[in-house]
Image (cartoon, rainbow, N blue to C red):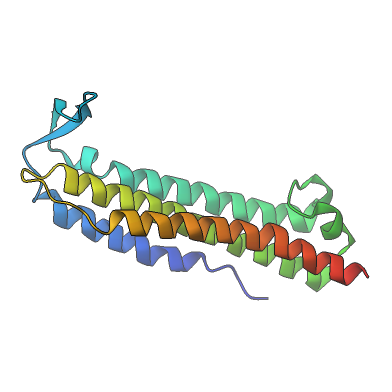
Length: 174
């Protein structure tokens, strides 16, 4: 039985860690943390690694939570499948042996994709924060296209799993 691809998430976390470390020394001594209605900064905080690493810490925390959830779903799917609240539960309960394991693996790999999308969202936020706190204004031409790509991949992932997978179950039942 193959395993879920959780180890692939170490690569983007490492890239994000490098970005955080590299850009920390490029930050101004005071970081704007609050803005008025006109976009002018009106509160500042000193530059600390904890403030700058917050998006990375949040992304890693959510990825760990989703990893533990994926492991729990797989464990419960093997031992107490009736207790699961998953998509296509009725069809899942009719599956036997290897087919059930394959479904659980696909579900866990879908959670890996969700973790990757969550990380990419926090990385985009981190990049936009870096650009916005610079002393000289810098436009980030990549933020909007990358954010649109992130939204598109998120929607596609959910549609792929929930709608197309349902069609596969319906075809098997006929």
